[in-house]
Image (cartoon, rainbow, N blue to C red; front, side, top):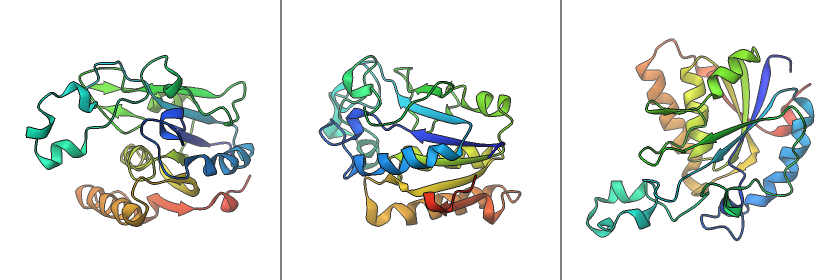
Length: 210
């Protein structure tokens, strides 16, 4: 897996059981992530790393009830505040020397689900992948229908081949997560005809080969 990387998205305490924005059965993916990482030389963790006044927090919008339904959908309980317990990676996730860490959502004015950040607040994930000479990424973590999804989509737009490890991720809305991913993927293919159908694959960790 010399030119591949495993990106583990936001397996943080606030997204796991007992957290302020917990994903159902989140901790069940951790053993699978720990097993599959042995196949990878390059492992990258992303973490939400928000200031207390972050734009995505409901509590920072006194007019929340007056907002449109669409605007409300992108606002959340306070989560992953910088240097808090909730922002820490889950204690059972294996971390090794040489792993890379990406902190995202640090700017209070901008929100992005993607590990690559957004236009106004980019992370250095793309630069790390280029330095490591990576052309294929494998993605797991939390959650499948938000941060994993948008990390995968941004990677495809940047020219990477992407494999989402379905048994290494959980969704906020499990019933509709796969349909959501398919819909977004087809839309970016419609916008850019150079993106191939096989740019995105959904696999299990058991299909990862050394």
